Length: 230
Image 1: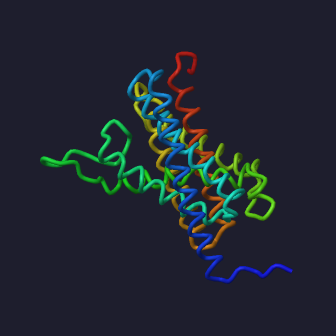
Image 2: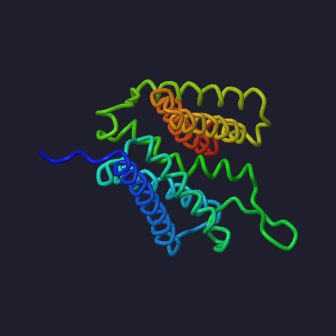
């Protein structure tokens, strides 16, 4: 019978696995962003797609970390936050890369609110795993996807109703985007925090709700801005 690894060896393996997963997430985000740029169009659309690629890179890196480095879902969140910190540092020296830096005097300074949003975006990819990845859902947490989608759809309808009642018609859809995106970021952020505090089920549910809500909000915003929408 093979000897079981000592606790110190297991801890070292987890630490190495977290750093390897973070490096993979970081590398995937850069590869996806720079592979897309030669065919990029408008600045706004390019920035949106690049942030989406960061989420995709995080999700792929987390799924790989679970299978190769034997990390648990909670540990992939740590890797995602570490990767995001690396992307923030990278964006300081590569100004064309999206990051939470703003002009301040003669130098670029960190926008602290932007850092929080960036960390949520960087960690959002891990929130997809409890919804879709069988390797995570088999051992938990495993939120019921249709319930998460129904809750997100209800919040989206509420945002559209508030937009219709209170927004100026010429800006119809803007309130939906702002309110919905803010709510999505708050839910995803709370989900990440709860997961890190080992409240995995609640964290996965709220975090997944935040990610799905953002998808619904973007669809609603696009529909509200099209000519065929009354």
